[in-house]
Length: 264
Image (cartoon, rainbow, N blue to C red):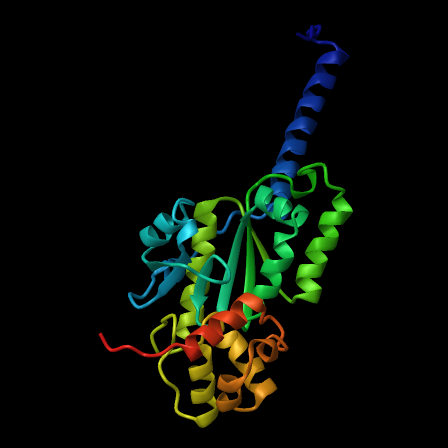
């Protein structure tokens, strides 16, 4: 409560102060509208998803809530046991989805490095980092350690990172990317695309069907051995000379090639 004597100079000061305060609030409101961006809702055209757009999700993501939201948006979602990543948005684009806490935990136990190497099998890679928490206050890790990891992902592995606030935001981002990616290719998106025409593409197609190979490792195998025949005749040790072909994967390839066919 402020007491002002009527008819004195104090009354004049009060009204001058009142007008200045009102003017200041008007200026602040004007500045706020200029410097604080308004939240942009996705355009309606971006959310119209053609029926043929499909996303493959790893079965471990079933309880994440993202799958339900993708379906609500209008995408067709198929659950598969993916060897790499959590989602496939196109034949060439793999997505690794991580919550903030999971990202930091995977840094500590070094799972993240294995996942980054496996993602190199695909032409395009993306990490979606979900959560509104402060990334630099997790598990008492030094902030520079986290900054260093982000730099390694972006620079050494050439994998972009997109931050999302929640599962709905994540689903919207993936829906828009899947729509854009699959619009570039008129053929339908399947786990194993239609047989191509050229000899080189047919060779890649055949080799990509080997266990654990896929389109990302087909080219390195063909470059190393120069022909499908040499790949078929290669020993496990020779297969392991190719980057990202480990003991387990080499054994699976050899087991398939050496197994007899039985017509049931």
